[in-house]
Length: 175
Image: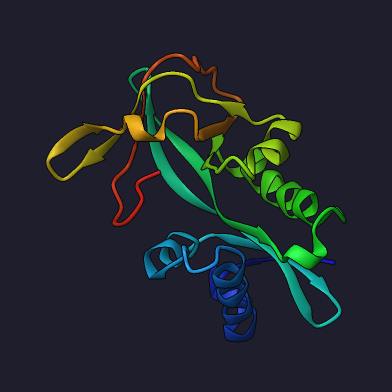
């Protein structure tokens, strides 16, 4: 079962379960800054009975593209417990998040690993091929190390995937 809830309505039990799930799935590579990036938007919780088996969230960010500041639904904290993979939980979590993106944002975006890439590609997400950057407190800083890892879900705004894309600033991983 998928439960869709805003951070403010999710409650400490669900949020705590999500944080523990992300720590487990990412094997120590998920920290406080990553969790902070997952908060403040809508969460999709995948439950099997009382056990949280999957999670993802979508938060608002601004992306600069072709001279426009676009409202972006940025996907964070997507994970499914190893013992529950290949049962559709990841797709169900993404379907819930994508419904939020399609109704509230100009586009969706996310940063992925090689492991996550097949899920997103199969769902219509497209790899960004143009240069990437972040709008930092010191100005625009290119982020070439993220090349190939940023995917977008086009919405109503036309996108040139080979043009520059700049994200807003945040602590930790900017993409």
